[in-house]
Amino acid sequence: MAIRNFWSMAAAAVGFRLLLVLFGEDLHLASRPEVSTPLTSIRRLAEGYWLKQASMSPYSGLLDIMIIYIADFIAAMLIRATGRRLQIARNISLKSLELTEAVSNSVNVSAGDIASLIYLWNPWALVTCVGSCTSPIENLMVVIMIYGACSRLAPLAAFGYVMATHLSLYPAILIVPIILLLGYGPDAPPTKVFRLKSSNASKTDVSDNDKSSSSRDVQQFLWKPVFHFILWMLFWTFYVLLLSSIVLNKVGGLQEMFEKYFFAEVFDFFRSFFLIVFNMNIVFMVLPLAIRLKHRPCFLAFVYTAIVAILKSYPSVGDSALYLGLLGLFANELAEMQFTFFLFFGYIGVSLLSPVMHNLWIWRGTGNANFYFATGLAYTCLQTVLVVESVSSMIKHDRKLRLLVTA
Image (cartoon, rainbow, N blue to C red; front, top):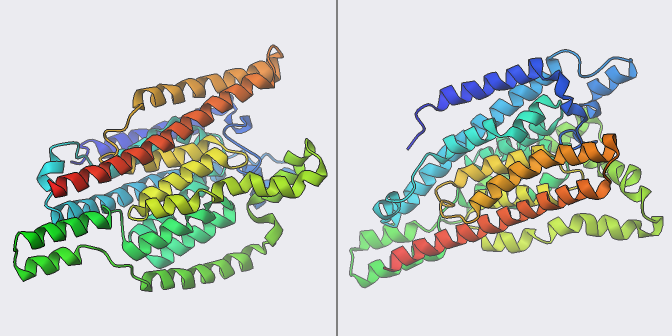
C-alpha cells in the first residue's frame, strides 16, 4: 500500500532543506565533529582546497551546497526505486509459496516510500546536507551501487562501487552483497522454504506442471551479470584512476587518519598491530553474515553499512543516515522487531546530549573528555542493539515463512 501524500511530504523535506541551507549559517554545523570529519569535510575536495589556498572560503556561495543538496535528493529517490523492486520480488516469492493472503493480513506497506521519507526527514541527513560535508555524495554512490545491483544493471552497479570505494575504502566489503544481488536477484525467502513447498506439493500428488513450476521457484545463481559487473568495474577503476591520478597509499584517507591522529597517542612500534586490528574487526564479520543472509543480499548490504558506521574511523552522522534509510526498505519483514521504543528515544537522547557534552568539554571547561566519550559509547551501544535486533527479526521472519509453508 503506497503512501498517499508521498510527493507532498518529499517536497516539504526538500523545502525544509533549502530553508536550512539559506538561513542555517548561524548553526555552524560544518565545524561539528559529528557532522564534518577530516575525511568528509568539504575542504578535502580539490576545488575547496584551492579556494582555501587562495584565502577564499570554500563554504561561500551555494554551488558546493547545491551539489550536496541534489545528491541527497537523488539518493532518496533511488532508495524508493530500490524498495519498489524489493516489493515486487517479495510479492512474487509469496505468490509462489501461496502465502500472499497469510502475510497480507499483517503489515503490508510500501517499503520504498517509507525508506525514502525516512532518509529525507532524518535529522542526521538534514544536518549533513547543511553541514557542508561530502557524506551525502558518498551515500549516493552506495545507493547507486545497491540500486544497480538490485536492478541487475552491471554498469551502474560497477560505477557506484568504484566511486564509493574511491571516496572511502570501507564500502569495499559491499562487493559480497552486490555479487549476490547480481547472481540471485533481490531478497527472497530461504531456498529451504521453496524446497519444502515443492516436497509438500509432491506428497499431495499434484500435476507435473505444478511440480516443475515449484522447482523453478528456487533461484539459480547467474554468472553472466557478475562477469559483466567485474568487467565494468575494471573499466571504471581505470577511468577513475586515470582522471584523478590517485596513489594507492591515499585510498579513503586512512593513511592520513592514522598518521595525523591515531598514532599521535601510541608508540610507533604498535603501528602494524593497530593497523590490522583497527580495520579487521569489520572484515571478520563479512563471511559469517554472508553465509547466514545470502538469500537476502539487500538486507545484507544494510547490515554491512551499519557495521561500518559503528566501527569505521572518524564516524559521522551521515553514515547513520544512510543505514537508517536502508532500514526502511524492510519495514514489512521487521514489523515485529523488538526494542523499537528504546532505540527511537535512545537515538534522540544521544543526538541531544552529544553537542551538550562537547560544549562542556571544549568551550565551557566544566567537563572533560569522558563526558563526550560516554555519549559516543552509548551511541555505539544503540547501533549495536539495532543491528542485532534487525538481524534476529529477519531470521524470525524467515522462520515464520517456513512454518506457514509446512502448516
